[in-house]
Structures are given as structure tokens and as C-alpha cells.
Image (cartoon, rainbow, N blue to C red; front, side, top):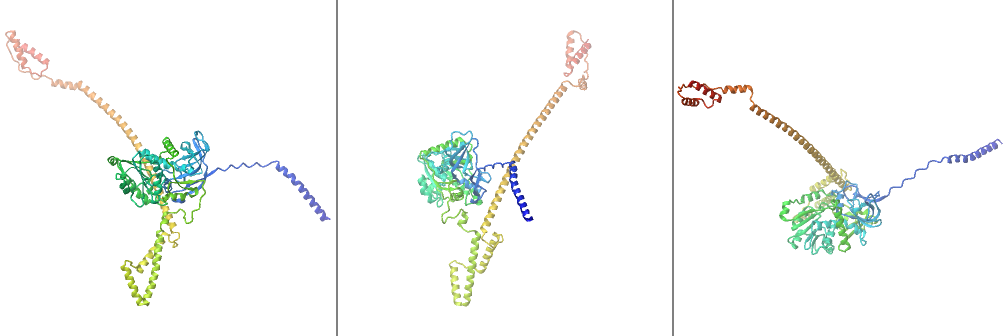
Length: 626
């Protein structure tokens, strides 16, 4: 019973607990907790090609970046296609001066659709197809561009054509018609005639009657550039283009468009006829391979021509330089020229050629296409294009150096290994010689024949020396590790580190030079101020001295005019009469004789006696006479 009672009691208590539990919940619900603040919406991002540093293709990557906003006077454009230019290759290698320090977004031209208008924007509408120009930053899915740099696309123009036109055709337009003053009957040399600017320059030159065009390109591109309008294609890889031009036109050409620099600028200047012009707009000769080549840079700079104005006067020639990136302040000039270009497109006089279109993720392959001079026309990047897999047998972008030949270490290692195998074979031959004298004689004859034919066999000592040299080289390049698999990477890393160090030193030097220039300017300003102060002080002192001198002169003059009392007494002493002459006694009998006596007395008196003495002498003489 006790157990049963206990069980009942427990059940009763449990029931009460169950009944009490719901009563506690309403009390908690009466004081609900504060609601959590709503999560802020994530900031929209866009895919962006970012240059993370100077160097090879691996310095470019696609990243998510905050979507730009349309500011006052700006237009928000969704990019459909963007242009790739040779200047971007130079920027990636650190050879261009117009860019800021990485990381930075490249791209100077694009075509797309307006998505939003900023304040104070007129003449444009949302949904219009437009072409955009900018200093940089066009390699994004969405860009914010000043309305003054936006142009409405013709209806018949594709996005790829819209992105291909701005830089190439504007550059060619200004060089031909502003600097070159191209007129009917003139001749023109276009370098890299199959490139973006070369293609545009050929078409624009053909809008002028009877213009002869010489164009350089590899032989495989000659048919294309001839179809575009080049009259005389020249393979610069196998022929001297200067000699070819002189054979056709002995006097040379009227206009040269030079994107190469170095020795080619000097050649172009020599090719000019009297009244000819050469327009330089790049230094493509500096670019060789994927990474910056310091020797190529030095060679190009060393071979660059230096021309004096006197020599230009004597030869009646002109040199000009052009870069659209430095023409940003001339908006009206650029807009006027671009409108002319769009009108030519509408009239069917010009049409850009699209070489290839690449996805953003394939920007490295696109750059390699241009870097290796494989393009005919414009290379385009598209944010909407899906990346394609490389065709079978195609390699990923890599350094041309690696594609051409193996590294020095691998070549020497292979040579050492081959020498070692040959040494082992020679040991076997020697052992065979010992076993068979007849075979030994035959082998000696064979060796003599090889030596006679110029094939001198190496001795075992030579082979040993080569093996040791190869081993030392391997150890030195690999840091003591005999494993040679990562040697190329080590060498490239060391080269990259050296180039980075050179870049840092160059920046440090530039900074110190800038500081020195500022210090020199400040010192010059302070010196000028000190000089001015000294001049003022000297002027005041000079005026004081002059005034004091004048006062002294005036005082001296007054003293001369009014002598002092001692001086007057001294003068009186000097003026005292001399000893009177002996008096002459004359007996005067009548007045006439008295007058003669006066005259005689007057003759006796000295001439330098004062008048009062003369009167006194006259009186004395009269008294004597009386």
C-alpha cells in the first residue's frame, strides 16, 4: 500500500507539474525579446579583370569588385565588349607611364548598354547602345563613364565593332589628318599593317584619293592587308623594308607612322622625302616575350634617334609624337574627330576587322595572341562570353622562351649525361681492344678517319671536366639541391625578384630625385628672397651714403665761401703791403708838373698792391710834391 500510495503521490505531483508548465509559458510570451535588426543587403559586385602587379600573364585575374555608381555627369553602362590594345601589354610589363601602381583595372574602350543616368546628363537615354572611352577601368561588367566620353552607336554596328573603333581609329585619324596632313598623291608607310591601328590607318588613308600605301606584316598576312588597301606589302621578317621602299620609290615616302621606336625610328626618318613627316606613337620594340626584357629595353633606348632642329631645317623634315591617353583635356577635339569616324562607318568607308573574341577569364590567351603578332585586326574581350577549352595540342599561355628552347641548365645537364654515356661506351671499346688486337687497329683507323673529317673525339678527362661543370652549375642554380625538376622555376623566381628589386630601386631613385628637385626649388626660392632682401638693404645703405656725401659736399662748399677767422687773419698777413719804394722828391713849380709826378709815382707802385695802398701812395706823393 505504501508503495502504491507513493506511486499515486508521484503521479499526482507529476500531473501538477504538467499543469503548471503551460502556465509559465504565457508569462514569458508576455515579454517578447527585441527583434534582430534586418540584415543589410549585400553590396552588388561585378566581375572585373585586375592587374595585380607588373610581370607575366599570371598577373591578371578576374575578381569580384563593388559595382560602380553613376555620379554627377556620369552614365552607368553594362559592358558587352571591350578592346585590347598593345599599350595594355606594355602596362602589364611595367613599360608604360600612364598607369597608377597595381592593383589596377585596365581597359580604355568598350561598348554596351546604358543602365542608369547620373545627375545633369542630357542627350542620352537608358537602353541606348553606346561606345565608351576612358583612361582606364573598362574591363568590368558595369562601368561608370563621364557622359562627355559616351557616343551613341549606329544601329548597324555590333558591340564588337563598337569596342574595336575608338582607340585605333582615333589614333590613326589624328596622325594622318592632323599631323600628317595627308593629301591626294602622297605616299605612306604603315608598320604592323595587320594590327588594330595599322588596319584603321590603311582604311582612313584610302579615303584620300591616289594615296600609295606601303605596309609591313609577316608573309601570311599579306593577302589580308592587300585586301584592306595596302599597295605594297613587305615581309619585315625576311626583307629590309627600307630597301624595298627605295626600290619602288627612290625618293622615299611622305608620311611614316612609327609604333616601333629604336632603330626603326631612324630608318623611318631616312625614308622621308623633303617636306615629309614621321609620327611616333609607341615603342613596340621594347616588348619581347611575356615578361619585361631589360636588355631589349636598353637596346631600344640606345638605338633611339636624337635629332637636332638644325638637321630638320636642313632636310625639310618633321617629327611628331602622339598618344591618345594624353589628349584627355581636349574633349571637343576628340568628339569632333570621333563623329567624323562614325560618319565614315555609316557611309561604308571604314569597317573594323575583329580578329577574335575572348572571355574575361581568357585575358591571358588574348594578350598572348597579340604579343606573338598572330592577330589580324582587333582582339576583343567579352564579359558575357563563356571561356572555351583550349583545342587539343594547344598549350596554356607560357613564356616564349620556354617554348623555343629548354633552359641552359637542362641543355648542359643533357649534354653531360650524353657525354657520360659516350664515356661508358668508350670504356667498353677499350676493353674490347685489349681482348682483340685486330679490332684495336680497326678502331684506331676509324678514329683517325673521324679526326681527319673534323670529328675530334673527347678524351675521358674532357668528359670528366664537363660532368663536373654541369654538376656545379646544377648545384648553383638549384641552391645545392641535386633535384633539377624545379630549376626553371627557381631561375624564373630569381629573375622576377631581381626585376622587382630593380623596380623598387627605380621608384626609390625617382622619389629621391623628386625630393631633390623640390628641395632645389625651395632653396632657389629662399635664395631669391635673400637676394632681394640684400638688394633692398644695399639700396638703402647706398642712398644713406649718397645723402651723407651730399651733405659733406654742401658743408665743404659753405666753408670755402665763408672762411674762418684765423684763416681771414692769415689772408690779411699775406695781403700786407710790401716795403714802400724809395720816395722820389720832385720840385713842383706848376700844376702840370704835379700831374707828371703823380703819374711817375703810380708807375713806381707795384701792380699787385691793393687799391687803398695806391690811394695812400698818391696822397704821400702829393704831399712830397707840395
